[in-house]
Image 1 (cartoon, rainbow, N blue to C red):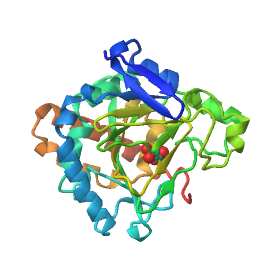
Image 2 (image 1 turned 30 degrees about the vertical axis):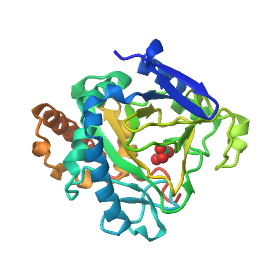
Image 3 (image 1 turned 45 degrees about the vertical axis):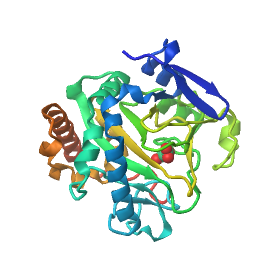
Image 4 (image 1 turned 90 degrees about the horizontal axis):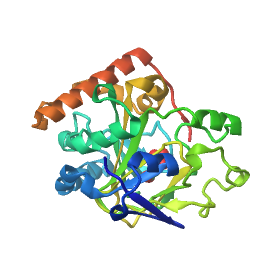
Length: 312
Ligand SMILES: O=C(O)CCC(=O)C(=O)O
């Protein structure tokens, strides 16, 4: 099992694997996020150029109105309209069958080392993994920021409600894999284990200087896994290239909890039509088909799940 040391200074995070002493799971539990070096993902790193090219092709289409699955400005949560005229900050559904490059992205999503880390962080068997979401966060057309939030706990929650949700297991792993330098994600380390302080509750939703905040700096090929209920925000610079693969994988152990989070993004409507045979690696293909099958089953069981925060 890989071990790394995570050093934190104000407004910065970095990793240092020569003083190895804590596992990724230890760090995720302690801080609510863990930055992993690119050396842990050799195959992903071999494919960075191919991923960048595929990312650039899809983003150009999206900006030109030829890819309807987008995150549009200034909207933070799904559903997003398919009209890019106000600008975009994300491209959705990388593995959709109508993307000619979908298998380039699928190869990275189902990567052996990445999925191995996911299993280690969730604590489950390969046969229990469920395919979830794979999107890409991109340079916005105008400067743009997300408000401070937890992905699955509304800002209106009481302290008791927050704590009760935070004490339950997450049943999934969520990550950002940077294809270019990326310092857009800002977190409050440790906030995944506690309710918001009075100061955090009363802060401006777009507060630039939240006490204890930390900017997650990623080099190309580095991966941050984070607890999606850590207090976090995104702050984006329209002049800086960004292509960061944003994925999540779940488990059958917690499918009820994850259903809305995943299915609100509309993945159920196309996932059965992806042909994983072209992946060219029997191991990855088998993994992909199994994980997809478990997602399809979840969609059938749950039906219409609604949205987390429809109008925001
Ligand atoms: O841009 C990021 O890395 C964070 C995105 C985010 O917070 C979200 O999608 O809820």
